Amino acid sequence: MACESWKAHLDRYVDGELPLNEMHDFETHLRTCLPCSRAILSRVQMKRAIQVAGQRYAPNAEFRRRMHQDIAAKQPHRLRFRWTLAALVLAASVVAALTSVYLERVRLRTDSVYSEIADLHVGTLASSSPVDVTSSDRHTVKPWFQGRIPFTFDLPELQPSEFSLLGGRVAYLDQTPGAQLIYQIRKHRISVFVFSEDSLRGKFPLNSGTGRTLSFHSETWSQGGLRYFVIGDASASDIHSLSELLKSAGV
Image (cartoon, rainbow, N blue to C red; front, side, top):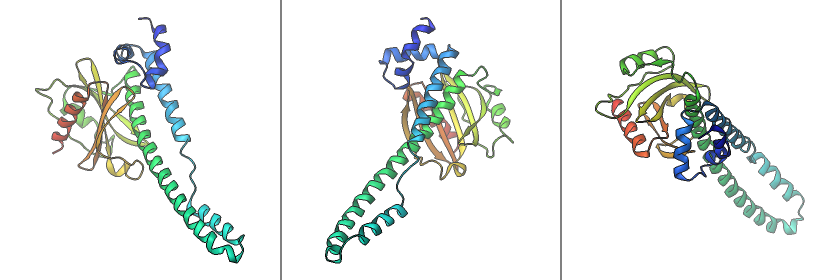
């Protein structure tokens, strides 16, 4: 299908609103069309920027303290008890609201890191040079990262699995350097990101688990002081199988 006919589907694809059969057709087109891949990346980055902009303000403890003092100073003594009780109720409500805001901010920050990982993956697919070291030999790819990232990691033996290693490149998450490895299974490409857990600690509230970002399945976990992300348009079972291979390599 001509590229022009796909442009009407870009926003629905980013929002995950395409029917499953159209989603698969679009992903097949995306793997061979650089302009559409770049358009998708631009839209993903815009959505992420809007999410980040919405997280910049929340009431702090000093604001609550000044508000309570202003209320108390303006009330007559005979109404002080009633207003104190009201202030306590208000304080409880504010604490509940702030807790809700905090939890929402944690959720948004978690979403933002998955969005950034998806951006990196899409950007790699759209690049004319997706890897900096091209090799299917793990003994070639792993040493290439020495001196380029501040940690070492192990790669799995892929035989007799269906996965093949295409190569790797250095990736950055919130200015933190890490490894990005590209695997292929059938016609699907999967990115594996590896970062130092200490470098990310305090920046992102991450737990182990599975998820879905745009049309991608993903898994993340921490092992041996490293944080792993596996993401791609392959099936959830393929993502899980590759994740298990990586976990076994690090044992």
